[in-house]
Amino acid sequence: MLEVKYNIKGLVSSIYECQKKIIINRRFIRELESEGQSVIHLERENRELEGQILQFQKDLRSKYQFSY
Image (cartoon, rainbow, N blue to C red):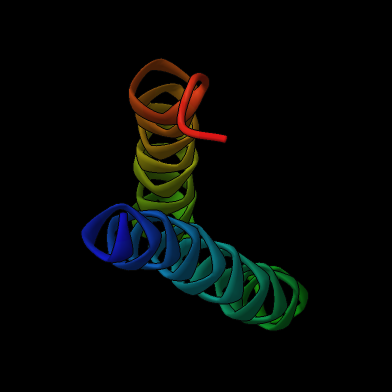
């Protein structure tokens, strides 16, 4: 049971880390857009991070829905 808690915490921590990166990237995107620079790379990274979040959430639901 203790291992399950650590796995859940790890997945939740991964979700938070992705969310933090998305927030930081959005700030950079706003700054770069105001300067007229390209933001394609950051937008692509945000889409990838959002995909990772969805996968982490899916893993949480599928693996641990019956744990408690």
